[in-house]
Image 1 (cartoon, rainbow, N blue to C red):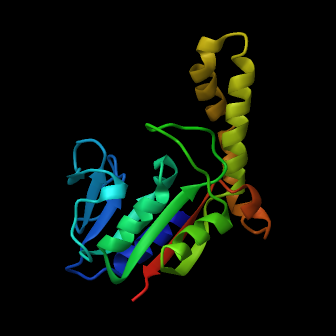
Image 2 (cartoon, rainbow, N blue to C red):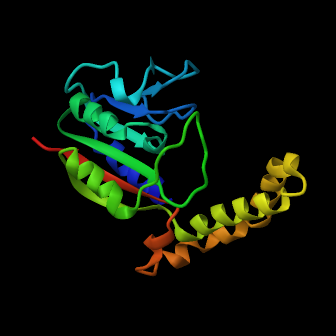
Length: 204
């Protein structure tokens, strides 16, 4: 819900004739003004390329969305430099990254970011932070690791059953995620959050 609220807010602030880009969009369609970039061709993919070399001209975008993508980029600072390049002055960036989550190559998986880490990334990239918070709560962070732990444990004897076990435990422990709204009350929730987001603006 926090992600939906944050994205809805930033999209509403776009100019009516504005242009945005969703990096690593996959099958996600957000808004007719927001084009999609991915490393592979697919339905609703407008541009094929990498975040480190966005195939658009300088200062051509009002908004960039980079959601759960930065951890898959070998040199994320290069991607941030490209995002700065294609954004107009005062253009907005919605950046979302994971913290507590297992290894998930797609096709690679390089990084994790703390709440301080994601802020440092955008500040070093010459952005001004407008809003930040947990995108995925600590209950979900616990859920993710619990599912991985028991899947690995039970597949020691039956290695080929890792994925079936993972599906089973994902269903079994799913109700744990419902505790996110309760744990958000605590100021310490960020310590094991599933992930974080920032909304920031390019410095003029």
